[in-house]
Image 1: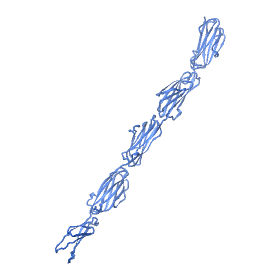
Image 2: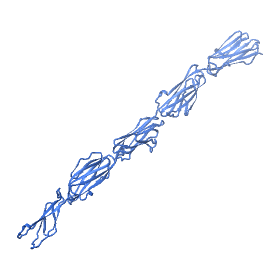
Image 3: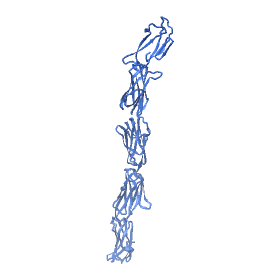
Image 4: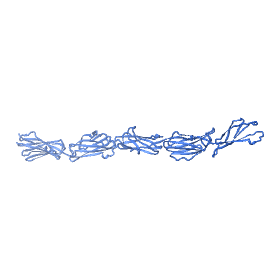
Length: 610
């Protein structure tokens, strides 16, 4: 048998042996005219190389010999030729990972099987991948042969051809299989469609199984991170602006879709504005309700990109303590690490209330001995609510506190400070920014307050909330003093009748009806002169002097100060000589202090003989 033609069975006769390419049959004695058929089965090696020019030929030669002489050896050998064709049924199968995460390597394994019967020569395996997203064919590893250069990265279509060489059919000693492992990497979610096709120089009786397709699903993966959460300023003054800023970054590898950024704001603030880059929609939420946070939605956030949600709020003027806000981010894209999706801020709230006080007086000028009203207006220009608000009024020493009242929507209590009657302290309720309260304080000006003097009363306000501007915390009301003393004169005697040659005791009175003290008050008593009688005495003491002429006797009494509501009386004894008919005594009063009513500044008393 020729090389590659291997005998494996002899049908008849039984006395045949096979050694390598040779079959020997011992036929024994063969009678003249007899014949013996011998059937030999052979199998051509699958790797028999058929010439590229066409089918090959296999020739077998049989030779017979015997112990007897053979007169004609020319017919002792015979040959037979068989035409040989090649045929190899290649079958392609493939499997891909059932799922791969974006940014990680996935693979498809292609199996090329030779179902025979011949060796498949010069196999070329082409793998083509397409997708609706960008991917990279990262590797191609064949079990035999070699592959061409990898296609460019980040493409939507890639193809590679590998030359696998020859592949024999499957036998008990070998699988008749070649493999190709193709690796892929994609940063975005997609489905990569992969099709492998095998061809060879050896004819293939069944080309229907030479191609196989499979899909490699890639799951998008976006690691969202809150990289910054701030509240500025910290501490914040109640009543002022507090800005929350939350920055999210997409660490990739995929684009995050339908990103939702939330910040659960604390009670005590009101939202002025909320912004995120264009293409977003925001809702202010309800501060203090964790189930209704401030929210902004963003359609897409690419790998490596950042976005900042800025929430401008106003802290309520009455807010105190610590403001706690919880921020979070999520998206419709799978996030491999949720631990960095949360952040919080804690902001200390300080208070600052700019209290101011204005103090007015009425009337001005004021008359000594009359009432004076101070109007203190306490106002808060913020920004915080003024708590434990106190008004302290220091009254002039020449006034006496009478009463205090609080109006204009305010409330509280006012009282004299124990041990200091000229100091009035008012404990007022909390004052919100823009709110004011009015305190009316009524005092009585001392009747002795000098004319032309100035009464000085100061008002000071304070708060436990902290006041940034102490310059407007005090006010002074200067009040000019004028005086007015209504002096009244009166003169009486025991009777309007006198006994001739007897004495009459006159009682003259000066009264200060106020309201002020009368300064340099003078009481002048005029009696008949020496022609009628004579002055006997008076009880005015050093305050009084007298003079007499023929027509009049004058007693003058001087008082440095006559207090309001006070009076002075002087008894003057006069002797009438004989019968002097009807006589009149007069009383006149005056002072250096303005007298508003002069019609009562004189009085008279008439007496006649009995």
